Length: 539
Image (cartoon, rainbow, N blue to C red; front, side):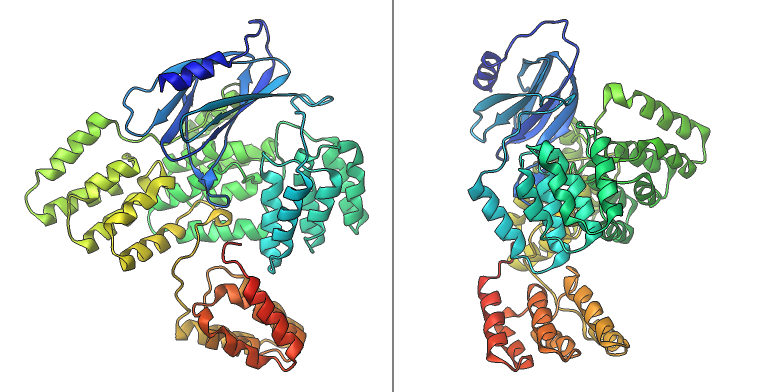
């Protein structure tokens, strides 16, 4: 570790102590050995971006020019070393820490004409073509929208206006095109050509809104709230969480996801799901980073009954610009953990151990690393008890990216069940882990959906409802079930479209050839076959 920091210190560029401009420092951490970054005594937990299977970059955008202290907390390292790095006026800094511990520093000069811009290099033609084809090959319009949004939100991606225009044209809805056009502006390397994007919008109203956005753009922030459909999905998932702890954990992860932005109205709905005032205040503070209409943030006060809570939130907001606090969950200290471990270990009888462990994982004041949770869970031997404890521990884990390390103690069936549980408890639907086990819809649920569609009046209405059903990533069907739904429409082109969209929700794809019976022409069957042969479940 000392070697790492010696290298880092040797790369630092000294600047004048009088410089006072704000710089952005982006830390990219590779591998799983690093647990957290500490900058000037503020800790940033490293989390995984499930869309790319990489650690989410840590972005600190409030650092004054001058010297700053950096620590890297690593697995099984009790006393991490520290070093000093320097930011200087007119430059942002990117720090990359490789899995093997090597460190690279890269400065980027602020973009001319912006208060805090960068010299941005557009994606190469090869990289862009790969990205474009990946999005284009996604059949579902909602998924396309998500993928384009994620591309423009990725702080490592930059585009020419022409490239951005091609991506935006893959989105069909005009309102969604406006949303992603706004989101793209952050990443545009030739902003003088940005007016060319106005051509993708049909209405003058949308063009005027985009022009107004560009004219008032603040290069230091993202001001595009998530779409209503995506928010509703997040809200419903949060609403379904069965305990206060899991609900608060889910909302916390949603607010701290740096790709998520909300209106005050959206954030307020999520905060309101917390049943007690203390957690509402906690989540309201967490949400502030992601709010795009901060002038309306006082509306959050209506969620609090006490004047003390309203005053505390007001003070937080008033000092945020200077401190930009990041609230993180800190794992239990080794000494405290060892005390807890020995206490449970010395309890007589499996029932007593199980009760103590359940209490520990249910506590909203205890947080653990995956390694700590693993030690505790292994104090019981029955697989059923271990599985129950692993599930209950998840919301208290500070390094959830490493949670899969627990799977080694389970058989395949229990591992699959735990994977499904984790998938359903991620902080954002856009970054859920892959589905390893799919369970088809029960006969009762399927019959209910089938009758609903069958009784829907009008061909267009049936097609619209079926499209929504197959786009729902929580619905799974056997081929036989999907086939019955597809046959509710008669036009061959629509049956083909629905058959394609159903494929990702099929639990028995080995039987999918039975779906070809709903098509009469060989060309349609060939087209469906080609789609299946090139389909990727990792879309």
